[in-house]
Length: 164
Image (cartoon, rainbow, N blue to C red; front, side, top):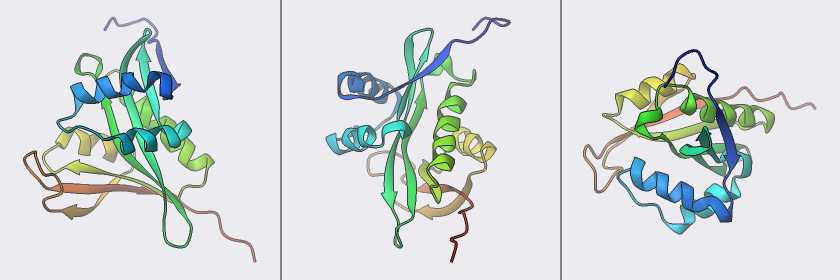
């Protein structure tokens, strides 16, 4: 990508009419196939799922699911975050993640988490830059890919004190 010119990166909602773009990206980016529930959860999350465009070309996406913890607190699960290889390293993944982290703060989410394959050092390093920590290891999480183990990578948010 040319240096010295402003990068044209924009984000857009995922809707029924453009979810095919998310499906195509996922086919290229990830070694697993996602079912209809994945796409329904992604669309239901609203602002927590975004497509990323570089000069009007769809090159990345983040897809999240909103979950209610025991006690009623809400948290966000990052189902997928990916950017096409030629467009990595120019801030697109960071822009997608920063958008979701901002939404977490605005909507008082208690935490955000995801699963990362244990050998995916680039992803682990990326999330650690944003304050995520490895909080657990799950053996045999993945069925059809090696290694099968994953880390649970989590970022917690300070919750406003409840007033009495």
